[in-house]
Length: 33
Image 1 (tube, rainbow, N blue to C red):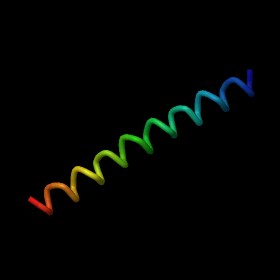
Image 2 (image 1 turned 30 degrees about the vertical axis):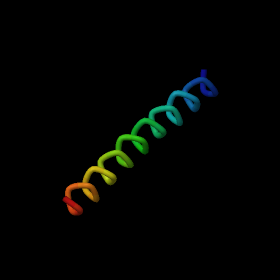
Image 3 (image 1 turned 180 degrees about the horizontal axis):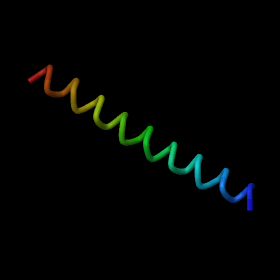
Image 4 (image 1 turned 180 degrees about the vertical axis):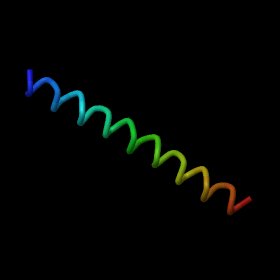
């Protein structure tokens, strides 16, 4: 089902985005300390 695949793809994008955001925050944290 094409519609279902779209949802899965966007969920994966959200996971990737969250992961990337956390990494970005981690980088900033390391720069501060």
